[in-house]
Length: 234
Figure (tube, rainbow, N blue to C red):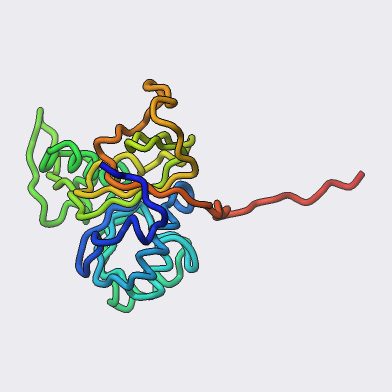
């Protein structure tokens, strides 16, 4: 089965459709599938539901799809750093489903593990619990959270072999493994494709069975918040 494609556009060919649900890896601008996001923008796919920790910034990451009005709903934990996100949400143009961060990660992981739902204490007694089933275990309340199963997962990894085994680099792993797991089709962009058998099996973070398509390309690696201090006088 061929998994390696020449470009992000080719890797998404035949996969995209209006109204689909996409799970996207990344945390802020760290480990985001920027090439695949740009390819979705260029394809013009609309009415998307996107499950992602956040929505990038105004001119990069998922912020590009907000600017082009291709996202109908976000399932997110954090929505700061993006003025367009705030404007669309407050004006009623964008639907938003808030999730505690760990809950979002577990919803994705559960979806990829064949688990339809799970109970958690996180969010009990808050607006997060509204409309959800509450069950008591050992005298404490838990709310039922449903798993996320996406039509498509888009993720970013450091290295891959041609079978789709992925290695993520340090904190860029973040939401990428659970996002990759929960997609019916997973497309990964990577910095380097290495020969089959060259990856140490103990260092593989996501096995290739979860990954259907791979594309290699250059990445910008922006710094979301650059903080510096003034040079001290000699």
